[in-house]
Image (cartoon, rainbow, N blue to C red; front, side, top):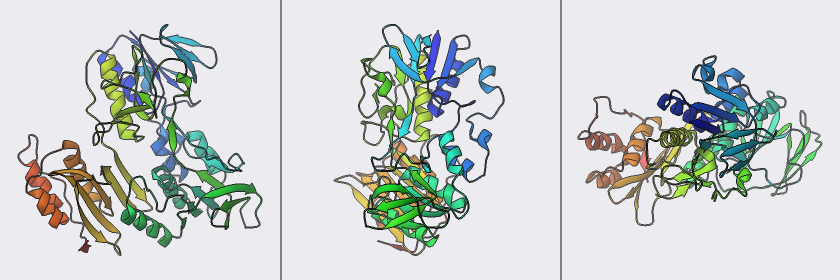
Length: 436
């Protein structure tokens, strides 16, 4: 058997390793579309930017010769097209690779907003290791930096730039930070926290254009905003979202929507071709519908399941939990599942505005289907477990509606009768001042 894996992110690497664990003899080739000596983790890039790790520290596997020892061939090359009928992958350099089974794990790419100046020197996305190298040329201590976008990715970059000592202005078109994972209360807390840390937060604001030149010390760019003001910058980082890398599939007959269409076994509409990670639409566990969930745990899960199915071990995808955990300059926030709630559902909230603590629970019937936390790290495991398992809470639903602070009690009581429940349940002693 000849396996080819397009993409060397978490999905592709996990798939290649899983294939090798299942099949000791077959040929496995993993192709990285970036010219890097090793596959790396995008989630490690912020740590590289603020100096906690070096470039080697971003690598997905730290052991020297890891892929060679597994008999996995690592190649650098961009895919120019696929011929499903001939079972061939064509690289842009002219090389053609035959495959028996192919995994597409090409990930996503950052969206570049259409505005004047987005291509100027000093204006960068922060998605690749090479992006990070360019950012480090401009992000000195005290340097004025404009971060365009305060979603999940933008907020991760914010943390790294803050730790480098940059003077940061956030420009976010939405009315609050992380609007796609947090409601008004949680997003508002993050905004106030950032302002208290010296970050200039501009929400409900759009960048109209970027121009060369500035009179401000250390700045060489001027950013024009929709409120009529301007902000000087030595660096502008664009973080307005990503889209799946599927353009090379035009003409192949492989169905795509927002991402590549896959069935419950992560197989595409073409025989012997599978997809995993940010480039595909796997099932969202909470909705039961296809969606592109661009988070690393989902990519890893996809990679493992796709490999099992490619190797003949039929394993349907039950669905992935949409889960985000964010560290914003020391304030931990998280969201899970249907954090917005459901039309006929019920909501419980605890709020401590002064202490930057918030817990929101979303119920449908007697099941916990979504949640949000700010400043409460001890709840993460319990919330994930209850939402992902879909366990019925029974009378605990009404008790939690009246007193959400009893979450730990509910978790232990519900889980005690479950197989594998041990004596060390997740612990929380985080106080919350008042309910709302």
